[in-house]
Amino acid sequence: MNVTTLQAQMLRAIALNEHQPMNGGEPSCFEDLGPVWALDIVRTAQDKGTFTSLMNAGLAERSGEGRDTVACLTLDGYNAYKAL
Image (tube, rainbow, N blue to C red):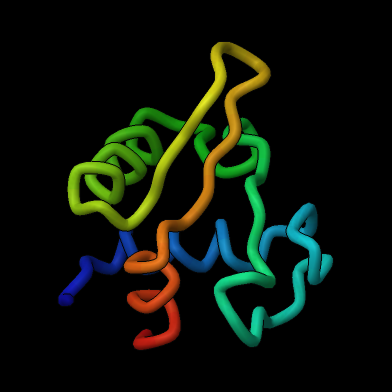
């Protein structure tokens, strides 16, 4: 799947987040990923639109509400990240 530059940046921001189990290191498999606080990756209106586009493409998911919202990559999102 082709992703935009902003989507690629967001995929990296999720996969390489310091709160991931790999502590910001390169995940070697999908199971190395977990949810991260959405506030860590969605800081601007542009970020919100980019994250929404990843969700619409089936590359990311979110759960929770308000400050407790978390974001994660789907398996397709992880594969898109690895293809960057």
